[in-house]
Image 1 (cartoon, rainbow, N blue to C red):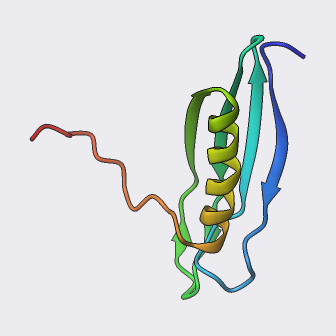
Image 2 (cartoon, rainbow, N blue to C red):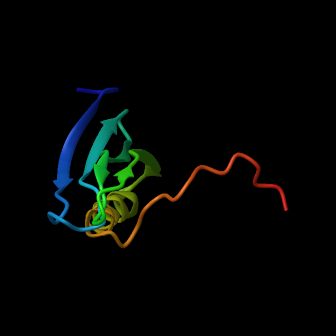
Image 3 (tube, rainbow, N blue to C red):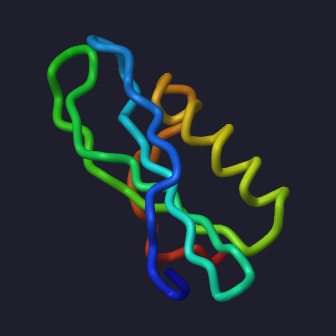
Length: 89
């Protein structure tokens, strides 16, 4: 359905690891845009890991990047430590 997000893939975290399960969604307008939803979880020492979301532009390269990155998030290779609101130099 045009203009609505739908899940196209879910990378599942390895139990006991530091990653987060991560869903990849697509929105067709008719260009396709992608978002990654890293789901809340706990890390290998039991600390809570907050959810986060990333979004892309459109195109096949963006889809490929989103799918690859979702597996990196699930494996613990990519995460979000905190949100920085002041990015000035």
